[in-house]
View 1: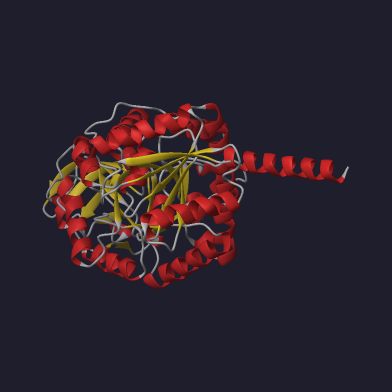
View 2 (view 1 turned 135 degrees about the vertical axis):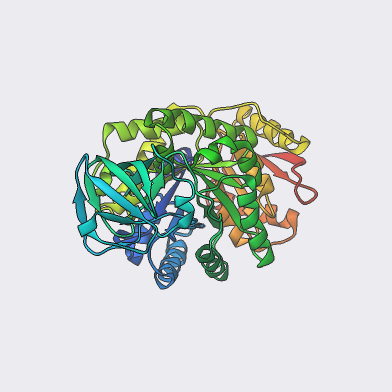
Length: 485
């Protein structure tokens, strides 16, 4: 009788483990920290509920605040016992208005003046723009978007050093809000002095990813890469934000130069008709799959949860679309930075993604520029799926991990590494779970991780595990099959 009870208990426990493993989410979640989430308990809760990475927005706040955030993330990482990368989102050459003496409203049809100045006066309906580069590209008929497009102005004429425009949509003119010339990109540097200062701060604190804003060509990405290399941060990964017409026009070269890209739908919506954004999103996602690069979807993922405790049906459908397109990660912005329900937003996104992944198979596309090692990894993934095997791989710098993620394995893949920074970077890759080992010897490391996963009940009797490594740095060229007895 006692033996039967023990057997039933064992089977019940095993079924729970199987259920947990089967529900491991493959699409990753990035949460942005801000005023709503500046508490250690909230950061920890978001990590427990599903946040795989955290974004620090360097367009807002001080370096002192960022240091506090980094410390909270590292503490949360220890508490939840998983590897959490940090993404530093650099401000880039963002154009913002100068200071107006008082906020003021403009109505449709009003005449306003743009001035190249740090200050403007509401009584004269002045709009201060402290960037001479903006005025070098302005022409009659240009459409100006202020405060993320809330106010639209058409340029009518140049009068001396002033640009006279007509208001097309009413709204409030406030200090330091965003300013865009629709369809045009003033000649500003890709990496500003502020960005360089922020990068140095992040290097000091071991940040794993840098998101580069307003990328136009591969040269912009190369400038950041050279800066990182020159300052001993060649380990860091670069995510290029696709948010301008130039970036879309030079998409292939930017993807090739980057470790991943962010589909920044907010700024794309300032440069393209809104009805074009879904097509652009799909095109970028597919290109990243073809080239084996990380893709991140940003802007209004669960925007309604900034104010409400649950998402809209349209937002849920939007997340399903992202899964169907094979996007690697989804990023929450206002939802967790300034929203009322940061933890709930992460929980909802985690739940929606799991349900979507149960019903939608990951897309498979024909790879572009595949090496022999890429094709080896593809064959390994297909083999693992055909025999329902786990994948266990060792990676030193993340190359093997990226190759496996590229082919969207339907089975669970564990990636062993002896480098904590690499483990964190791996945690942002689609479908992969990193495991840290203290062993630097390749064979000993794999044996240690294999036995650890077995002891934790993840690998069980009767399971099949495909173990793969690269015999030389940057390769993926050796595999063996283990059947647990």
